[in-house]
Amino acid sequence: MYFRLFNNCKSIAMASSYLLVMFLGAVTAVEVLRPRGVPLSKRQFYEENRPFTCLDGSGTIAFDRVNDDYCDCKDGSDEPGTAACPNGSFHCTNAGFRPGFIPSSRINDGICDCCDTTDEYNSGATCQNTCRELGRKERESLQMLAEVAKEGFLLKQQLIHEAKRGLDEKQSKVTELQLSKRASEDAVEALRLVKEAAEKPEKEAKDRHLKAWEEQQAVIRAEKDNTKMAEAFLRLDVDADGLVSAVELQAHTELDPDADGMFTEEEAQGVLGGVETVDTAAFETIWSSIKEKYLSEPQTDAPAPVDPPTPEETTEPASDHDSEQYPDEEVPEEYEDEDPDDEDDEDQDEEDDKIPPTAPPTETTEEDEQALPPYEEGTQSLIDVAQKARDEFDEAERALRAVDDQIKGLEKEISLDFGPSFEFAYLYGQCYDLTTSEYIYRLCPFNRVSQKPKFGGSETNLGSWGSWSGSEDNVYSQKKYDHGTGCWQGPNRSTTVKLTCGKETVVMSVSEPSRCEYLMEFTTPAVCQEPPSLDANHGHTEL
Image (cartoon, rainbow, N blue to C red; front, side, top):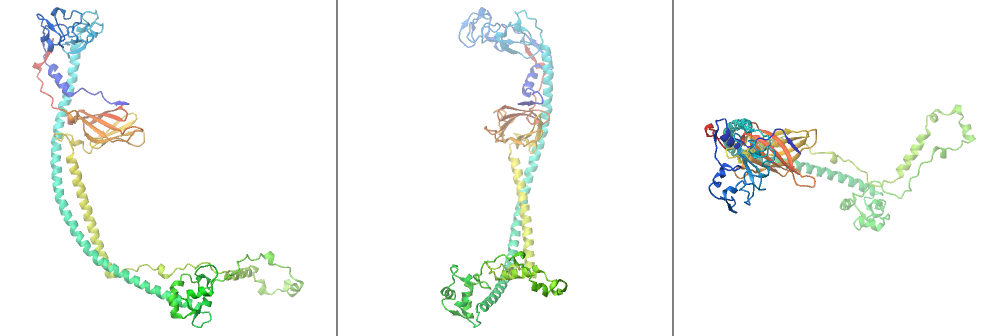
């Protein structure tokens, strides 16, 4: 794919060179006699009164064999004005325009290749000399390019001036920030000491508060445990003789050590510590081992509960005796208000009471619900002082990080290669877009190149800023962006940006000459060179 907004102009340097020859001056025509098709630069090799030596040194022939329509030299240099040699070339003088060369095969082929018509001297073709008109148009074009170069160079000087001033300001700012950073570091360190000094009594006070609360909770737990133990002893001491025996303990099968459903007297004695009975003092020693299993109500091998009979099953036909005892019109009021279902509910409650619990009930104690109480006034005061110290320390640290980030950002910018005179510095932090029929291309010169569909979709990275990659004599004429988004089953995308002289900073075109390798043309005053001085009297056209 290839997108272009403007036709790319020729090199400003070439334009200036041509203007030295052709620009707006009186052109002095100097005619130098030489064989047809020979450029003035090689006139000395074609001396009419001397043998001609092939320019490649392959042989020497009599001068009258030059342009005799027979190829004698391997390099074709003996036939500069005929089509005899397949590898020869013909020089078009093109007075008033640019001289040039064409292959010898085009001589006298009936097509006018030289604007001065000298290539068709013996074909009979009707040609018009258009050199002066072409020269005029080219001079106008070159004049426009020269003006662009001149204006661009002036803008470049302004950019350089502003960049150097900006660089000085940034370096001064870095120095200022470094001083501020040292002051901030001192402030952070001082506030750190204040914070640590405030946090020490705060921690001690909070630890004392927590310890007192934990001790209080331990006392409460111990009191509750003693109460529960006393209640358990009284329940286990069925005969109220002040002793809990192994036989009495057997009623609580949940205490069976092996939980095999057979809580024997021997196992009960084992629970009691190997004795048959224990008093309250001895019971305290075994309580800790049984309190997790102990249930206040003993488990019994009660039959499994059955569903209560339905009213149909329990309702029997009333006997004649019952009917006679309570005739319909004489039923006592206390029986009229009774609901038969209430009796069923009472029976069901009695059944439920007989069913032993299968697991200890989950109790919510006051201990579970009790939270750490508020701090005392003295402790809260220490906490407030420490928190204030922490806040001030955190704020100072944030300020220090902000200063450090500023220094790093400025140092990074200063370290970038903005050209020999910092002429490219104005591009830093800027982005330039080119919109085509399908995509929006964005060039951020010292960051990345991207492509985004015009009508919605995700952005694709075409490469991140890498380095200047121009030729050795003009390294700042080209930039390379690498490590973009990978192509499907292909390499990572990359972009080469070619910079040309222009009064405006504009992305001119984008193309993809190779898969996943993009080419972008970008105009900027930063690459404009000072045009050479022009002297019309020095114009010369060889004839």
